[in-house]
Length: 282
Image (cartoon, helix red, strand yellow):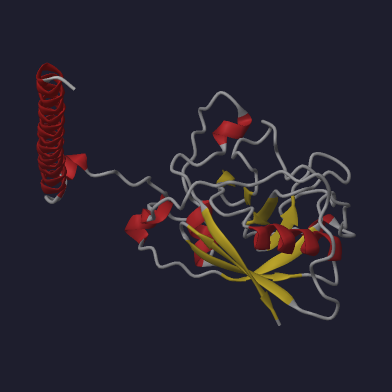
């Protein structure tokens, strides 16, 4: 190998070392740049998060707070109703020989009813099933007629606008005489023979029977009804003699009697809700 070849090889070796050094230097610069960018991003994100948290600390102003929906008798509206539709009537959920009752929690107080399982077993079974399913929770009393009747159980609160029931119907278990529809009686509303589903009514007429023909199953009767609402919160006074406080508080609520339809004319101006229904055994 000549001296010239040796010099060429040494130069090539030096060039390779220099190239490797430059590559390593470039790699380190890139790492430092990435670290710096990461730190900047972290600082920016942290500042935004801190600012957001800081902004959320103060209490919202009174006019910015969410207004709670109004209900009758000074109450607040319960969670929105979500009654489902069923493909067929329920199976047997009540037991033979068991005495059933229910507490209907409403905007204006509680209503305790004794379920007449011996008189109307199919209708009691249906009511117990729907109550235990939470079907009635959040529904309104869509019909209030002073000193006459109150009615609930329509899934959309608009009587005559489908759906008006749970998607199925149950058979009638009718009383023998019309004079059985007296104050505190609980019956199933219907649109004809064997067409009842979820809507029920309570007679609030205090002087004599309500005057209905025996076309509606009677499945319960009110035995108690206490309200914690004050006279000012109730805002009205039921006519007639003293009765069951909660029935009277619901029954005297004003409706829009000048409404365009009969259904709207008996619908309370301020909603009265069924908050929930508890079923009791024994």
